Length: 269
Image (cartoon, rainbow, N blue to C red; front, side):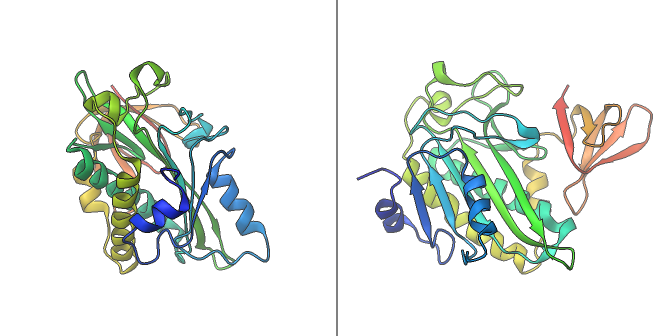
């Protein structure tokens, strides 16, 4: 039986709708792209909670089109489909609640404390500083009314990558195996994550913001950062003071002004 094959995962899931349906692929270019292709098909009727998971992505990517590489069978690489019908400003709630669900699942399964680097990097501190153990990529589409019609959340978690095979990246990488010294059941971690994701989503869909809990996980707050907006303005140097209700980062610049970073890149200095 394949560790994350459809029979094994369906037997392990305790969710009501996330992971129903669940599809496993040995290898694909990108689970996010595969789901987008399905949505573009006029005949597609994929329900909310559809999960596509693969053991290997040849064209995996994170934010800002950065490559996401992981050895086959080592990680959790999946995408989840939502039909939220939320205001577009609320889209970042999906990133917040998904990062919370992933952090809670990893802590439950491994006992390792997990933080979040704004806006979407999952971080742990093995020995010598914060290192990236996972990341998220949210892609969505708006309806004619300007609301968020569909959203595809891509998740990549470094689970059993040996230290020698960790990728070189702008943010130093690690894996749960490298940090803890023992392999982790990907099936157990996946089931724990999807259960928490379902709970977190239902709370948000009912109007409960994930932002307060997310703020508690942000390792960025209180730190000196260099922030760059996607608009191409000059980088801002300052202290990350907090986030607003939509998850935008508030940076007190060296010029004394409070800058709002809606989307961009932030480096801890």
